[in-house]
Image: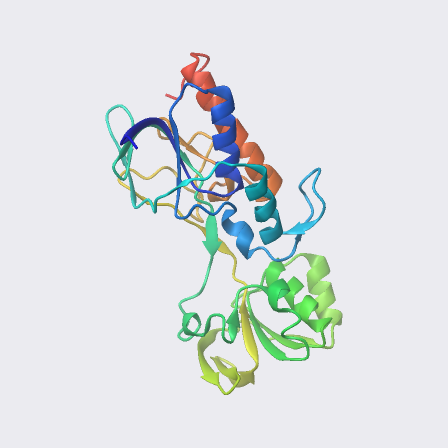
Length: 300
């Protein structure tokens, strides 16, 4: 392929796919390159194991099931390229070695894993990142839940329904919705450890693990980590504006503060994050680029 094009779209989730499809529809004469770490369509959907209910016209499906539907729906596949850097030029951008007039950042989020000693070492053995995926496996087990938001409290209730015993470790007062907090308060199977509850290390023990915290050391069968997600993007030589949590700030047309740099989907500060909003963001970015190239508006 040529090392220059009109538009580069980075990311193979819902937002990136949507943007590419609509760019090709609106601007068939424009050279659009779609790149992502792998050619697999779906992005963070592969880590969403609960049922997705907000996609109009599609029956309820888990994230991986939704990703399979998307892959079957289109023949489009991104070029496998793990982009390392994005650099500004006088008249455009360099995405690694690809020169482009426009860049659409659709790199999404990744699950946040604390730097607690032992957590990463235990991944997929006794440390898990999904409650729904492992609920049956953990039925009747003793589980440490790390986190204080909706996912942690809802996950604790899911496990409690499977007769698991769950201790919730949270550094600060819970930010979970009231209905989840009420459910936990009423559950005989869930205990919220006294705040602050700081996990200091996790180590293997037989078929389970030891969790050391400021409350002492406790034996568990498993640990589930639910401390949210974080936005991911390549290194920038000139970083676009972000909010306090690192999400890229965009306007109503998905434009960042930097000329001809757009951002769509979960990597942006637009909430809520969902399948439906990510799809719409990709379409908005495509229309905004179409309008600029058609002379209808400027991104200056």
